[in-house]
Length: 232
Picture (cartoon, rainbow, N blue to C red):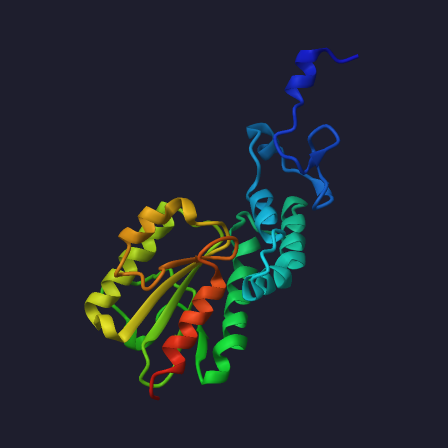
């Protein structure tokens, strides 16, 4: 029989782990040894919680529902060592970025807005800014070009990177020519004061979330206003 100390040592640090702390019930595979050794949840545990928490916000929920099965499959293969990938950045981020682009195309594409995959178009290149944190941009005639940075997890570090790039581009291109927004999977309300400080480099609400206010749906409304009420 195990004593109390042995039971304490086996205390589960992640609610998805069962069977002596090595089996992930959601992914139906073993957790990686280095995760169990650190006794910290992997990123998937947080991603899964946010992806399965629906909010009755049509655009936000649509994105989550469209990627949950693919994200689970990616992470299962990763933990099982079947993806030949030593990192995990694309396991949730890749599907999330694609789904955000597809949802914006479906919602505002009818207005003649092109949702482009890529960092910076040629006419927005800035000396010294070889890489940018933006995952897509929106264009329509003479309307401002809108750049979207998608994050699985909004953090101050991610905010600084996006803020700096947006500041440089606006400095070179002018405030009127472009708009900058961030969309995060996680709730962002705890960073409200930080987000306020990022303006005017980030526009309007600045940072939108799939899991809390201001929701991604609000960004869709803002984009409809930008591209639906200005001349071509």
